[in-house]
Image (cartoon, rainbow, N blue to C red):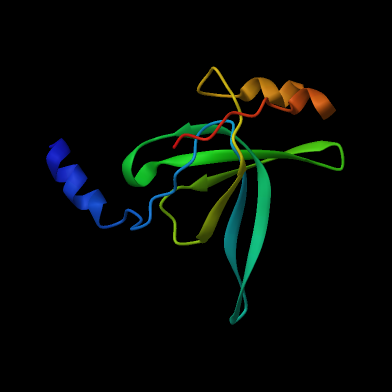
Length: 117
């Protein structure tokens, strides 16, 4: 049964896989349709979670806007994501960074980690 699921999901996966990890600060370039025009909007923030697998995989990006925390969840395999640009790598010791929701200002900063080669 799982082999059949993998076969069906293979058609909906991205050709160019997004390489990122929890704690990375990223710029997510999202395609937005307005009428018949298409534009790209950038959502920048820290990746606080990644869940699911295959075509159901998604990640959550958090940023602070005007003193208020804003989170947005993106599916990994959507064609709406034009590009995922990694700004810096954060050094983290856990899989989910939900503790950042309780922090404000400089307390939300993560130490920088050297990039893997």
